[in-house]
Length: 66
Image (cartoon, rainbow, N blue to C red):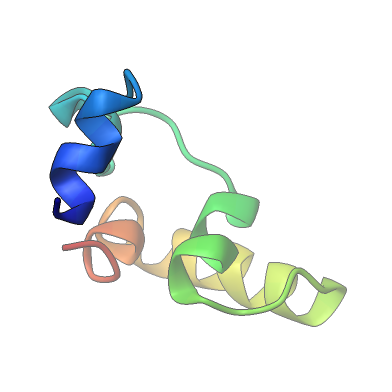
């Protein structure tokens, strides 16, 4: 039995596509940008995110997400 069939047999279902894909279609915050960049949540990184959002707008998040 492989890992996929074990998940299915326990009643777990795959994550819906709408939850897997993120982008800047909606509103996002400096916290979202920090998390998407893989950085720790700190005042320094929040300031970085706010500057990047002011400079690049929605592209600041699009550049980090697949």
